[in-house]
Image (cartoon, rainbow over the protein chains, first blue to last red):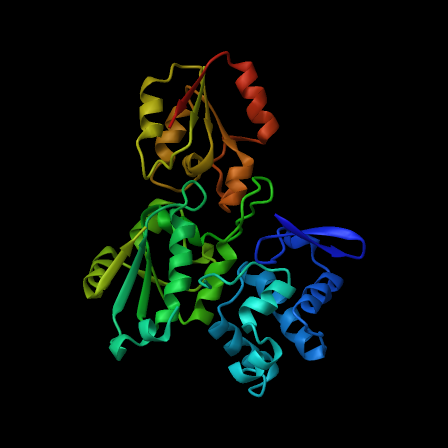
Length: 111
Length: 129
Length: 99
């Protein structure tokens, strides 16, 4: 088990950097995780992160990228519901990277 | 998953999942659900059949707080977003287990044993859980 | 004696075997998938109702809740929590688990 330091506290993560305990999550943790990837979170990032947290709350899974893209398009409009936009925000893969910042497990089916 | 696998000559196969086990007591129900979600990436023609104790997977109002297990029943409602829309429940299984359509967490098509037989016959591949 | 049954009555014969040999006055506790045997309106209901003439029947509440069937429990079946499970084991000197 590894850990990250956030606000003087040690937060447990797995070997790929995903939170071990989903309940540990807060916005500061997301920002610290993003910083480690040289990513500064702006409102567009937060929109997707918050969407993922809501999706998880409702369905108890992290969506596959295809499903995420479609659902974002439905909720936030076609200019955001496409992989180009989402990959620009999250170059390591929208589902993988955004799920990590959102404190969720890796999407089911993601290798 | 690679694009080549997904596009494999563009042949769409009819893929049927048969769920016959209650949730929680064994791991079959959860395993099946995960395979359905992963398999959805392959763009096949998917049907999911619930019969025998498998109908209990779809029971509304599951609450696992006291037993400290993961409640995966809300995930059945995500299937529509994965384009898995053909959910079939055998009526006889529901009747003998005290369930009616109102008890289920997702909209399904309720089928007779005869109709379930035909749906199974129509599949190219069946995965059994 | 306390008998515990953890299999669905529709999928295994554990409950039937239990009822066949359980002595009058012994208690039956339904747990895990066994709690489906505690429901009203099922194919197993008449069998369990008949058994309740000779046995006190309990069902584990956390397992009923997990399966979303706590509202369908047959009248006369007593639900217990984990503490109640422990009390039953303590009350009856022997336990037979019908696995």
